Image (cartoon, rainbow, N blue to C red):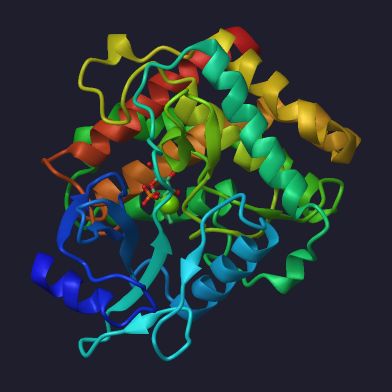
Length: 341
Ligand code: GN1
Ligand code: MG
């Protein structure tokens, strides 16, 4: 695998040879490698895009290049292939992309302080501001209905009914909980369909591990533009809340450790509003809480649905990991609801 990624790297317009490789295990979908130059300094990030999940990878590559140009150096810079394309396809039809490594950058592990939460909010607000004048239809839809709770809900109910892997019995309580809780949030979709909440260019994966920080713990930029597409800004805010305001990891075994951090939520919101408030319409400003509840439930449904369907979508490291991930989201949702409704 390591030898292979060194060979793949030669097909990109990289100024240096690659002398070492490290696997980055953070993501649930793509395979990611950090490549090192002759002086053994990290020089670039190579990714094999999961084409089971991203069915039109050329569209994804187009969106990624476009948004990186719009960010004008305040984000990732992608390196074209030697043929001058945004990607390289290997002989096995593997789809690869490369971006430049940002020196002295790091991602943060939880828990982070409330002042970091505020800075995360500001980073997302600044990203939105940078793409605010972009025409959303200039971007391809990468995964249709990515954050459409009621459509995911229907698919989930079908998975429960079919129960192909005979796992529904292990998740009775969770299934019942999600079945009754999700419906309260469907009304948000009407506001989106009626364009009361406008279409924007979105990031759609604003979790903490997708923000780079420098040594002084100042944010540098958002990374991972796989899901940049037309969508709803509120869900970028909500996904950041889902990740940042969870005191524990996404697959925490001890649910007592999963607490929704209210002060972080306040900080995130204040930080987000600072750069973007004047761009938001009334509905957007009024639906932060609904969007957050909506998104946590949606993520719970996505994890549980994948568990019921044999763990085909998200990478897993142990049996029952997706079920545990769903339980963590449910616990987080309960904590959120206690304080916000
Ligand atoms: C996936 O692969 P990664 O870690 O960047 C997923 C997100 C989820 C996240 C949960 C395309 O992102 O939507 O929020 O896992 N991406 C896709 O950690 O489904
Ligand atoms: Mg991602």
